[in-house]
Length: 247
Image (cartoon, rainbow, N blue to C red):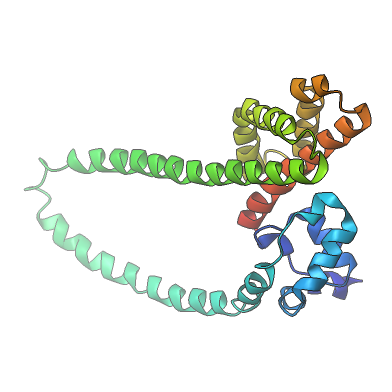
């Protein structure tokens, strides 16, 4: 059993594959990037269709190329790290030679001493700004994928009530946008487990109103199934980006 676990790769690194789709692929014997790289698109489509309408809308056309790229660079990071380490060792030897020179000029440089105190504060504030700028496009990508997946979901599940379902679903996502951003950051930092994240999303969607669909006369069972499918789409979309970035 230990050998089987060691041969499995984290397929959620591939864009479009979440934890649930990874489970479907593993169940069919696709456990590594090499397995996925050599798989046929027709085989992947068959697995998704067999899993149900929720997975049928995913497009696996780019999964094989991504898997080929991820199967190669396993040996390269080790060599780059080994080469980078000896370069850092000679640097401390050069620094002590520069320090005695500065000691002779220490009497002439008391006026410049306040300047280095101002520099770290500006670099720290600049680094905080950069982090915020890099974070917002990633979350915009999540929101864009969510809206696209909702459009596919309504087209496949509630065709007759598609427009009303799309309005309710998009309004629900907009209302929980701030919470999703906060939960996603907590998930990345390890302050929130995947189970806790799923519970938060499920409880929010269960209590949210879907006025357009409820007024349309859609059967309660179909409305309940649509809520569950919407919840799974939100979880899979965010897990597909966040867990791929953490791995």
